[in-house]
Each structure stands twice: as structure tokens, then as C-alpha cells.
Image (cartoon, rainbow, N blue to C red; front, side, top):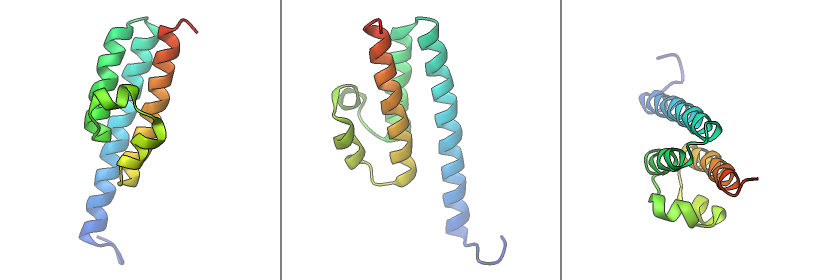
Length: 99
């Protein structure tokens, strides 16, 4: 550890980097499934991402108001992941509606 770095800071950095990697991988899978027209599988992937990255019950994430869902998440890294997943939720809805 370098000067001014604490063990807790290193752990936090590792946590954030893991979350970013997991989010990136999930978003890539979601985009691929959506583009392939595999919307049911994309919805399942999105549910799994909401649960693992956002810590939110997928049933709530499917229909809940974005601002309410974001207010339930206190951790900034998880909140950022949730915001991106909510964008993906809207893109999936648009794909299902044929827009």
C-alpha cells in the first residue's frame, strides 16, 4: 500500500472495480440479447443483474419508479449500477413495444 492508503480504501477500490467489471459484462450480455431479439432472455439477465448488482428484488425493479428504486440504494457504486440498469430496463421495454 502506498502512503495515505488504508486497507479499507484498498478493499473499497477492489469492490468498486469488481462491480464495474460485473456491470460491464452484464450490459454487454443484455445488449447482445436485445439486439438478437431474445427479449425474454434479456429480461432474465436484467433481473439477475438487478439482484446481484443493485441488491434489489427483480419484481420491484421491473415495475418500480426509477427515483424510488435509486433512493433505496445507499452505496454510491451500487446506485450508479442501478441507474445504468434502469436505462437498460427502459431500452428493453422499448424493444418489446417495437420502438
